[in-house]
Image (cartoon, rainbow, N blue to C red; front, side, top):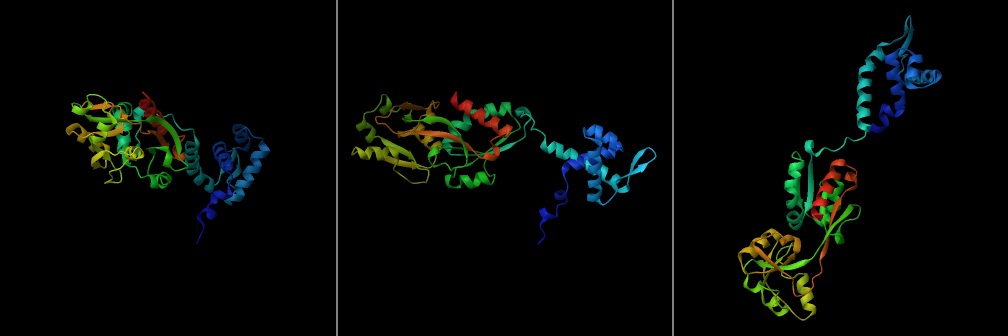
Length: 305
């Protein structure tokens, strides 16, 4: 099988020679080309000799008024100018990111907790500042994060740091803690319940894997020889919020999830439950991208406010 990279004719050419050739074809003079290139005339003459060998053509011939291009040189001039212009554009510094005119789509991996507490609150701000961007929220699948980031399937992740894959850039967002929540007029939440009353209440729980009735709260209660009455397991926090607002069930929930929920009442729990840190993660390929930097900074500032 032919190796395309080995057959590439550019492997035989110093790209600086192409700049010299473009200048020679514009000036039809080694002397004037040397002046434009800020090179010594003998240096340009040596480069012209190399170009003649590479193209197997004299390229420029002596004439009555300087040098005149050969047919091969005439055929080279337009595509050479275009190629050099494209190359200059490719290696030019990236233009500053202008959110007002940006047309980009970012894929964000997030749990429904992160979608509700981080993405949803900033949506209006992002839409005002960058009306042309699009966000695609995809399911958070921790075992697949490294592969998804490497393949370009995700551009940003919101996750806890304990099981985040190595190799991703990370920025701490905030530390979350748990509170007890129920409907606004719940008769048992007029004040902070005692531990005994807490265990007697009917609880709902979020089980991301589906169907689980035990969580970190239950494990801490078990260490004290206690248990609570968990009667409902749901897979998403969005469902849990609706259930809490419309029933007498209560739940231990992250505080940010309920801080602006007018239909709910929040009380401190009668036992300490360890919280968690929320981080923003992204692949190395996007670390220096101006648009992605703007997105990260916008979200981080909003989450901190």
